[in-house]
Length: 258
Image 1 (cartoon, rainbow, N blue to C red):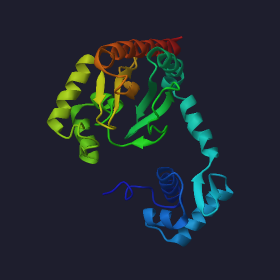
Image 2 (image 1 turned 120 degrees about the horizontal axis):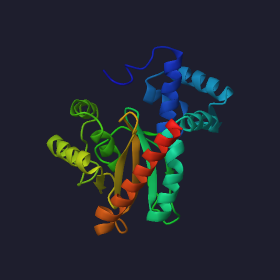
Image 3 (image 1 turned 90 degrees about the horizontal axis):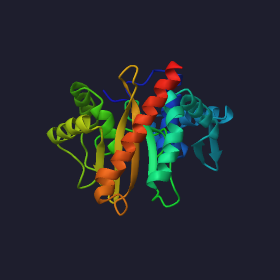
Image 4 (image 1 turned 135 degrees about the horizontal axis):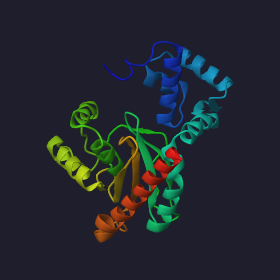
């Protein structure tokens, strides 16, 4: 059964289906959306017109785009997340210390980045906040999240997503990935070495609630191989990252208990 077959039946499911496709496409016309949703163009047009009139999509000539009004809901969701509110200043400070891009992500049946910060020298990467990155195995953040799961749950995730190769360095063998996850659990650090984008690397560490022991998300540093290389990649950044992660965990515990 596909994810689309599991969508709620009725108007609500269709509305979110269309909004999801618009987000993936970063805007599109009626015919294109109809083809992607297996709906008639007349039905798609009616839904889009209703969404436009209620302010959830905007229209530019013949194309539709998610409106800025949707930011309200994402911003509210983040502001209610203690991990985000605690980690944000740490992320900003970590950018100053590493001179690389820094982000936090959570697991919502995918890797979902909820905040990122960077310096002007960062090579722009296609990291979109709120976008569901379904493949966990080819990013440091994704592997760190997998490492926080049981082996049975990891197997379920891999059954769903597979292990598609993004570059020549992507791990495509299950046994190799499980070996990597065991190492991550022991060291507390996940590495990604040009496994998602050639010329880019990332390091991540899991953030755990000290009250419940549950994973609340991951903290990751990413940048080009020309800067994240040698001891910087394998030693300096991971050490700095783990210290920042510990600070987030302590501050979350303080916020919770006092």
